[in-house]
Image 1 (cartoon, rainbow, N blue to C red):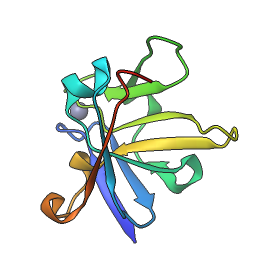
Image 2: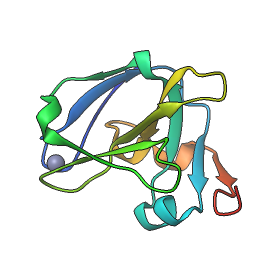
Image 3: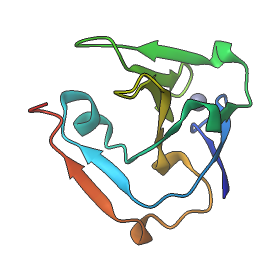
Length: 115
Ligand SMILES: [Zn+2]
């Protein structure tokens, strides 16, 4: 499946390929505030179709995850990092994807606050 996604103003748009089996809701200080539902894919499956200059980056704590957001409307469509094996990974905020029914996607809760 190929999904299209964007921020609110359209300054950031992307395509991502894969199958959404479930989403992750994390309770860390960042995710709890954003309310994002995350879907992890290899970074190579994410293609950003708008200029890199539209994206800002926020990091905190260990600064290993790049929380990317639109510098105009402030929406966070995805983050970038590496998995434990060192593979570049993207965490897609599936709330920013088009044509998906969020009520049909199982949500797993992750205790990021304690991690
Ligand atoms: Zn935007």
